[in-house]
Image (cartoon, rainbow, N blue to C red; front, side, top):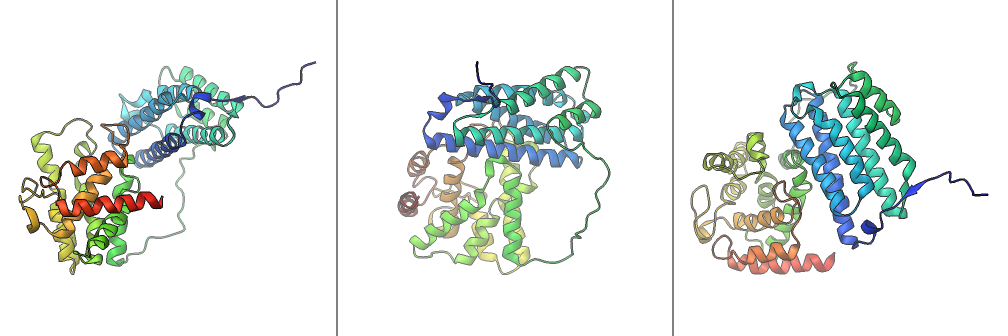
Length: 368
């Protein structure tokens, strides 16, 4: 007599056989995509615009493509079904329902749990995977004529979630009118910017860590507190850019480039308004100037560029290269980033600072 199999499991040998660094990178990308889905759902539930529909679709499509790339067939099939359900509002963003957002959050949570279980134990619960698959199949079938709150609530219940309640929630905590300390406010603004895109996760913290280490290695050519303020604020002007430009995946037109370049003025002017941060404001204004004078906004060259801005320019470029982007879809390695920076000395970067930056990155790699 065969022993009944009370707990069916599935595995993905191709995925589990990959190098641990690749698996870790994949997990990081998965978490970023799921976090972006949550950001978009919250925005859409608060009457966010159609750009959040497109951002969510890109995140889910990226997650599905990443699963396919690393051989996660069972999860890739699930994500394809989830994407099919969500695609019903892609062409008609005005038909978005909060119940759809609730379902998507539950579904992506299930995906993350299955992935965690697979990595930890080499196999994951097939019953849970099949339940999610069946729910998605039924939802797809029952929404051929369009989404409805009733059908979505059934799917939510079947995934163990609470039926979406449209009744307003009474908040017990009130937001007090208060002026925070300058640096805390700057740090908060940088954190807000990093939440606007999955491709900026922890970007501000990484920038501060690297530029601080570079400043110390160079003998503090910039005042540490002013440099910290500039580090938090150098890209905050991006928050004031049109979303259509900030999140554009294709090349920007000349006019769009001019608009995007205004972020250095916005950031520096905010610092000037604070008072006492003139040095930091100059760093922010100069951090896209090139060593040969071909940068913006003023075409400043060489040592006329504030030393803090010259350091920020190197670190900002390094962070950009080593971060996954919507138009690239993958991260470049530290060595690739260092190579690109070294290839642009005298043109974009101060050659003496780049030499020291190489030592800083090498030191950080050895610590890790």
